[in-house]
Length: 93
Image (cartoon, rainbow, N blue to C red; front, top):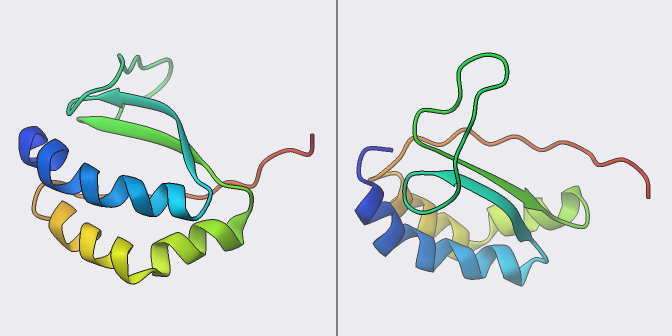
């Protein structure tokens, strides 16, 4: 993250509604731009911020990421951060 203040002020208010619109929710946020402590157990932690989000299934996260609103938000977010995103299938209940 190159500008935590800009990230928090300009990107987060745009991207958070796109997450909620497709059923996503944050379960953990750590690092700069608000959030809890990030502690390395093994290996190096992310340099500035990590977020863990949950969706009902892969289709919901793909819908969110393909939406025009998300694409507009991401274009702004890229002014303030370099993103690495991963999807991991959850365990059955």
